[in-house]
Length: 100
Image (cartoon, rainbow, N blue to C red; front, side, top):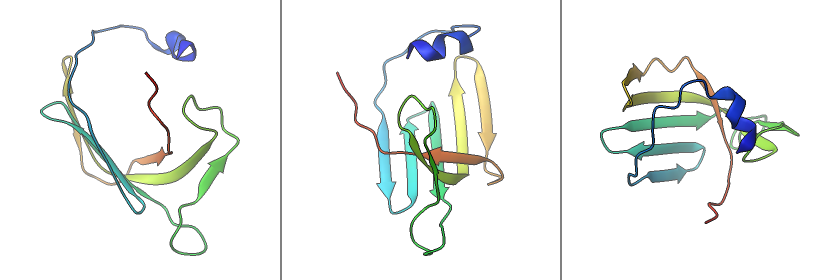
């Protein structure tokens, strides 16, 4: 997480909320009631069922990321109000495990 420090210009706070994460086939979504709803759908590769991947990337969660496109993003927190359902934004996803 120390790698993210230089990217944060204005820290606006922390809140504790329940998070719902769903994974169905090549679709991934995350929601925090009244705060965040984001979803992506994997872009399938040559076999038509599995997503294409970026390999050997410098990402804090995984070095292998599935390519995806956004199917919806809604953020309403810390003075930010953003809604986008255009489907024109790209994204990615990867498996990871929370550690306490």
